[in-house]
Length: 114
Length: 109
Image (cartoon, each protein chain N blue to C red):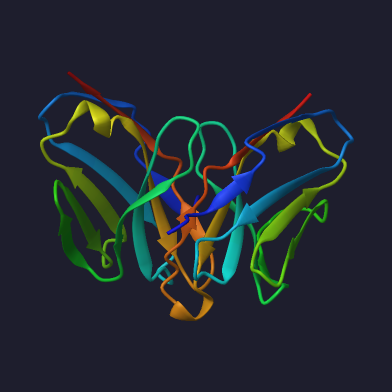
């Protein structure tokens, strides 16, 4: 049973650039949530996708956007990168209608903005 | 005030000791209570999940929830060097998880 996968593993960008991160959910899951984890902090919720729509959003600016595809995989896009966007970006998958909020995380993409 | 406060640590214990980790929360709407383990530069791994007050055991791990006090705990018995990691408490409402900042635990052989 394939778990949550993310790509790439690491990424280095410069300020002002744009980045796209990718996630494939655990087999059988239909919902993808994205989190940002700064060094030494817990993950912070960015947004959640279900049925190819953004369902919920955390306190992140519009520079952060996403997409979900018919096969449930998802992308996170960040425009106009800032130094403060350097973090581990985590994707979590779950079952929308299970209502249990049990989420399984991928290994993350470490983004460094120079 | 943060939604979830976690004892910051770090904790360093000898092998075989009991590790005690704690979080408090302010929002009584949280319904689901989880503990994740995160090794350095890896994604969080779900360790324990519960939705009711009381204790839940899984091997050497015991999760404790007290909804009236808004307090959750994780106990690790007979700790091993392989338990050295950062432990994150996570509380769930209807769609997102709210995490504590994590406690880094080192188990000395």
